[in-house]
Length: 152
Image 1: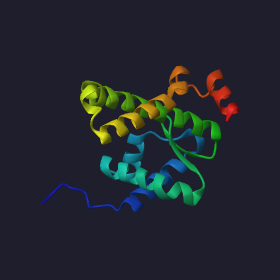
Image 2: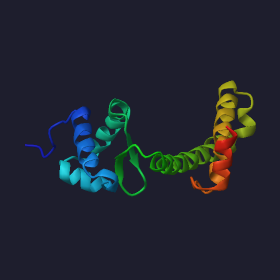
Image 3: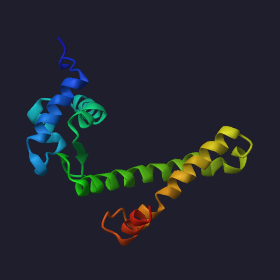
Image 4: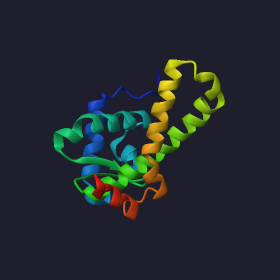
């Protein structure tokens, strides 16, 4: 006999996650609380979140966000901007780390490899594109972000 839970389709896990979070309104719900109240394993929770983001948000025309503390279902653009900025900070750190670990050590040797040159250039462009966010400390209320938004 095994202690493994029965497999749960991602769509079913997503429905559980969505219902639990949406029911809390703008208050939101922490991940461990979602898992506990919905009887989900960590993997089922992750699969459910992916399903929600891939399908449910478009179907419901609502955002499913994590703000660093709680998950929330909302249509609030300010809350969505804050969640996007938090995620972009994480992505920026990953991009910089990737550049330091995969490009910098062999940059001189890599100039002869077309794929390396192309990917290095793309990575550097992504890092550069996040420069305003980085300078503002990822604050959606910063003057730099507001000016950049008005310039577009």
